[in-house]
Image (cartoon, rainbow, N blue to C red; front, side, top):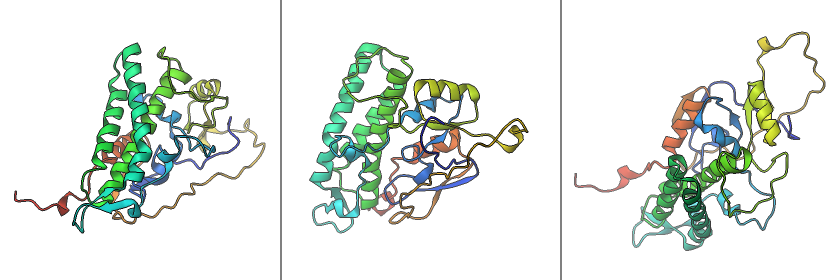
Length: 272
């Protein structure tokens, strides 16, 4: 590998549930390197940014989840609330700058539906932070703003800076040293993709199955895997599986579909 650590790979069947922060734990590409689906359009997930170490980095609110204490009452309602002005303001400038980047990209390179979908999702989720909603749904929408921002940034990072698919004058200034330890990277079983990622400076971990090893392979050193260290509690969300099966394209697209789904709609009175 070209990184000084080896994350624990996710290779067997998984059960994915929504966690306390609105994300999906180590099975979420926002939080942990995933298996690269070599033929998928989602290869750019390897470029998702990691949380920066610099305490002055303006992107830090993207890794700060919404807590129930950040929800203020909506009028006299005991059921619904809104995101506090302070927490909403933390994301305002980030939403604005990403919207501007996407608009500039469209003018210079043409509109790309995948990027536009992420930016629209980000802006819509941000608007919903001011709507009276169940607290659990506000946690989901807050996470959706963060998720869509990070995914849009990853899309641009992958296509503009890592592989130069598009010639775009990006206003987002950032130090980009190789190896790119500031981005997530990925696992792959493909030697060809290992070489491509290695050459681009992307963290890459080449996994092999026992049947792919023979007597010519020599173990030089045994190292300890880095485990996922975020709390894995589901509360206040129900411990309900949103996906069960093997990791890969189906698992990633399923999570995308659940990322901004409301779960408290049944609590809203209706005459229908």
